[in-house]
Length: 461
Ligand code: UD1
Ligand code: CA
Image 1: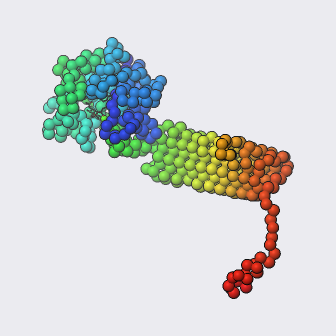
Image 2: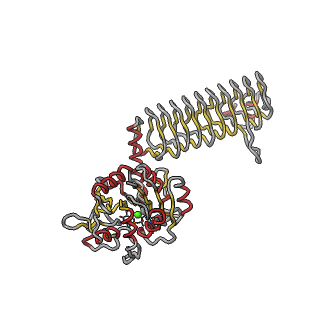
Image 3: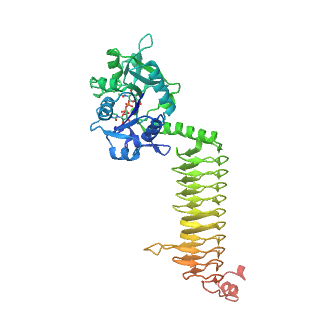
């Protein structure tokens, strides 16, 4: 049987109080609607159609290549939203899964279970339900004494007795595709919100003598609908736990998983240890046998095996195998630390390559530079890359030694096997085997102590 998916993502999300459209708010580094569409993709549907409206361009950009789109011009309700997908789906034969775009926690397994149950029962419509600890805000499932599903009642329309019900509509349904579109034509907006409710389709189908049913999922937490920032934080917490447990199953150790904030697409190798209070974001990939200590923030960075990151910030950078950094250092975009290299504390590196086994130990800025292998950069060195107008590049060859406190004024080249004396300001190239020294000569003033002491108290004599 053909499978289709409709994702509802046209609403503004007034309750979020945000400039950003609701379904684009992120949970663990990924927009909510992208979580939904990725979970739907995993059941291999023949077609995914996303209903867009508010922020249509942005939503389409996020889902490009993963979904087709239909535009709901006015947000008249979830029933009207599904009806806009008729141009893409109405004449198809098969089953259609409808999912709201603000429920980011559903797993593809749950969608598959719903689909299988729906098929087994031969229903025209099956709603995915859950037992909510606090059902406020959700549609309630109204059953008769035999347990048959009669209809769904929205929070704003329910009477006292109906609102006592804890079984809620998760916002996910499976429908016979053609019966869905036929029934949608009968939905009216005669309710408290003046909206065309998708939920009314159940009662309409039932009144037409069709089989409707419910598949109750065992765990409510997957169905959390995000309408405000409180639910967004709850969803993030649940997703975070899920992500970290998956890493643990794959052999990653967490000192305190509750305070390790790891985005959905991050990859981490086995026997890597993540300490407490660590943030790892975006497309970061971390290899095996690494240690990431407290206070590190790592964004879109590639880290090899046997790497130690001590309380440092890394963005769009690369650290090869057997390297280390920190504490309190900063790799900025396009910093490349080659294998065996050491970056110590209070070091900032931007758009620069630190060659194999080279050392940049302390309090140094390296910007726009290429360092060869086995280079030693002394404490407090500055790669002065900016003249106020443009940025220039510096190179330092293999096995060269840069003394402490040097300033290398770009563009400048220090050859391999060369020396730069401490505290030198280097503006001219340094040749192989040479030493450059560029600083004021030392002058000693004899007997200065006593000269100064004349004007001081007797204690100085
Ligand atoms: C909806 C359900 C409710 C269910 C809950 C689950 C209806 C009438 N109510 O309520 O029974 O318990 O979800 O989370 O279906 N949208 C559109 N176009 C519209 C209106 C909404 O695309 O015209 C989209 C929104 O972007 C959102 C989704 O549909 O992603 C759900 O809309 P929302 O307003 O959040 O519905 P709820 O009040 O949460
Ligand atoms: Ca909602």
